Image 1 (cartoon, helix red, strand yellow):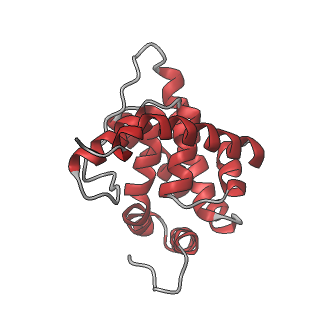
Image 2: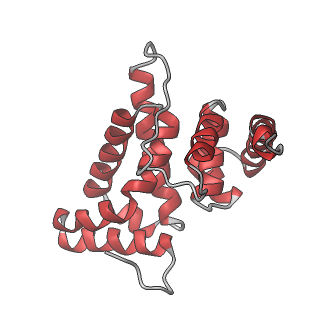
Amino acid sequence: MAPPVDESYAESVRRCAVRIALEGTAALGDLFDLVAPRALRFAGTLTRNGHDAEDAVQAALVRVALHPKALAKADHAWAYLLRIVRNEALKINQKQRERPLELKFDEADVPIPLDLPDTQRFVREAVASLPPTQSEVIVLKIWEGLTFAEIAAVLNESPNTAASRYRYALEKLSQSLQPLLEPHK
């Protein structure tokens, strides 16, 4: 289901939740189609594993299917759904603490608007090298376009904490990505 041009992404998420509340789980596919790639990118930032990210998104959508009115009534539906995804990803992480963290992104799942494949790989590796608390803020701010207030709601932190994590992450990324800015000799 493609949202109309004048409709915001959060409103599209809300409309899908309303449809689920009215029509039942048959309408869940539209929500999945709308949010899956972006939710998987975010969940992957937290779980550092593609399969676990899929499990987190699936568990979040099950929660939405059971209680669609909560999402439909949320002030910021997309941020609310991301918070559900985050909670599910953190539950999975808690169950599997002994497994080493390994962040793998599939090129098709995580579009980065850069032209060169080597540059995209370099940026992915730099984001993956950040602590999870910083990489999740980067994903939410840059790729999801959330405000610091919305990020704070997703993370259950203050907007100042979200902003400072973002600032620290940008400092680390600027150091990691410095070779991209240097002229090739």
